[in-house]
Length: 246
Ligand code: GUN
Image (cartoon, rainbow, N blue to C red; front, side, top):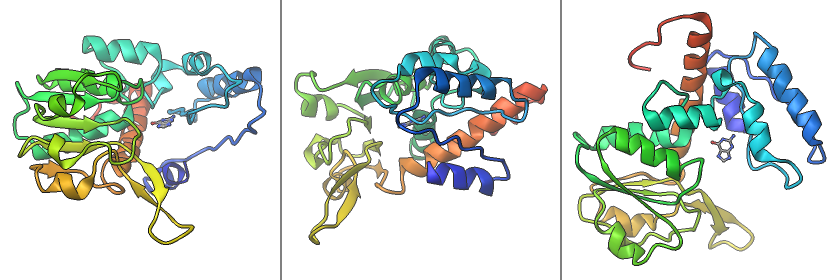
């Protein structure tokens, strides 16, 4: 959240933070969202997840005006993405597509395997890769022979939240590997921690054609896409044509 606010301001937008206590009621949170819906100075609304367990996440997401839903989590935007209509698209998977386009000249017909079926990453990632004409498989914790399936992937997206679960021998030689995981693990030095992805980077980098590091790979793209979505939402609100390269 700190990075999101900082980069929003660095990009020349205003960032309004509403830091509510963990004890906030559902009604208070909904009231905050609805106030922001009505505020013409606000083009994008993001409710950082996860919410404390006493709050109903679905109801909060559905309270966000879909035109201001810069996370792309509202069912209207989820539905629009699935039918190929103009939508605000979830930031992390959208950022992954930009990285994939850098590494893969023509994704048409390639087998993309996504490990993880979350609403935030796995499912929208599948829609975006389908729209890029990939053949898409969504794998998850119950998938049989996950390593064998991963080895079939021309594009492998790891979004499970398990530190270094994807090993080097899961990777097809030359594959494009996108690591969405951000896991904090104990460092060699006692009392310290470090960040690792869902992919064992050093092993995988020996086999992959292209691979994203953690940190510094997908994470910065998520924030860039959040800013992009906010510009898109602002343009639509004002009836301004969205630049083709945005
Ligand atoms: N929690 C983890 N990832 C995200 C995200 O992309 N958006 C929001 N709002 N919460 C998150």
